[in-house]
Image (cartoon, rainbow, N blue to C red; front, side, top):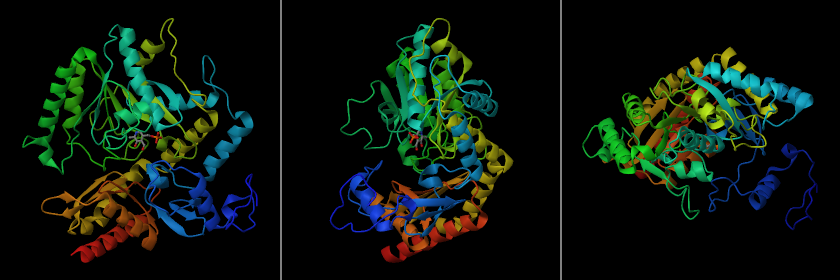
Amino acid sequence: IVSGNPPRPGVNVTISSTPSTRPAALLEDLDRRHVLHPHERGHRSQRRVMVRGQGSTVWDASGREFLDALGGGIWVAQVGHGRQELADAAARQISELAHFTSFFEYGTDKSALLAERLTTLAPAGMDRVFFTCSGSEAVDTALKLARLHHHHRGEPDRNWIIARHYGYHGTTYGSGTATGIPNMQVAVGPNLPHVEKVMPPYPYRPEMYGGQGTTEFLLNELSETIERLGAGNIAAMIGEPVLGGGGVIAPPADYWPRVRELLRSHGILLIADEVITGYGRIGSWFDSAPRGMDADIITTAKGLTSGYVPMGAVLMREEIAASVAGGERDFFHGHTYSGHPVAAAVALANLDIIEKESLLARSLAISEWFRTGLAGAAELPSVGDVRVEGAMAGIELVADKATREPVTDTLALAVADELYETHGVITRNYGPTLVLSPPLVFERAEAERTTSAITEVLGRLDVASG
Ligand code: PLP
């Protein structure tokens, strides 16, 4: 047994040191015993150990093949799995210079080149970049930048952050407090102080807005919140252009432009969290500009490297960088691996692939395939709403189509499990909503396989419940 621990009763096999050649049952057992998973569902005993990927296909330790309709299972994998170009970029960089810090006056060729490249892809005015290792760190950085910016401008009381219910921004204390998904803040408090939540647009559930138009209600609520907290006490508002983890929910077209205008009139910054929507997910490099956000800070991660190595990037207007680190000032914030050269080299190669293979356009094609493929499912009694935004989709399941009563999370999870077990298609439920966010190299046949599997499983669900 190749392991630092003594052999255990019941685990009686000889295994090689190459993980992917170890028996599946043993790997699942090791995982169950020793890994505490992010968002672990303690009551679930099954383990799914993945060992290989190519394009939009992945294989588990038993050799079973799956279609990855959720981009590495978590809205990533823009360029698909198994890209030799990215492996080569990482290997080259590791042999040239595996790591050197970005702290103080140091940096590396790759982090400088990547920062410049991002500023050319980003909306106009985003001229500076801060690198992180994840989306949560990017969001924490953005919250600090907003507070620091105002402090150094001479408005130190501006430290409130406005975030939104249903928003997902990560799980560190800062990003977790800004997240508006129930349970995230339970029993881990005190959380980050001075974070206030407002409602997001949710066009399928107009009852939330008490008979007013969605944007009207939300603008009134935001105005009242600003008045109650005091405009001079608010640093920034954070929001995803399209809610991702909240269930793939796009706002009405006038929402972001009007929010932007209101915030600007009160000197409040706008942070666009593009950790999901960035790098082509919805047909453009960044989705905040087309939605009218005109953000001051943009947080990104995931698609920046297609998940091949961990990396996030915070893009900001020059005046924000200038106020937090201008003149004699030190910016006391950073991570050992900020601007990691291997991650930066992979990110550059990843952006090359997105460009060369026209994956922004492909995400719009995937959108059409999903729309067409899900048209039948939309008619089923258990489907309340089908929302397709670029290469992502949310299928909101309902117990009653007329009243729009949502299904339980347990039922939605059972649908995702059924897709996995009987069709080998990887999706996931976020609350009552089944979500798709495949690699942008998804092919038409793969989109069709996904949408017919969903239609078949949901059709059976109706038969079973009807
Ligand atoms: N922001 C958004 C919009 C996200 O969807 C996520 C993760 O899904 C995060 C931030 C957090 O990113 P990470 O999990 O890399 O910390």
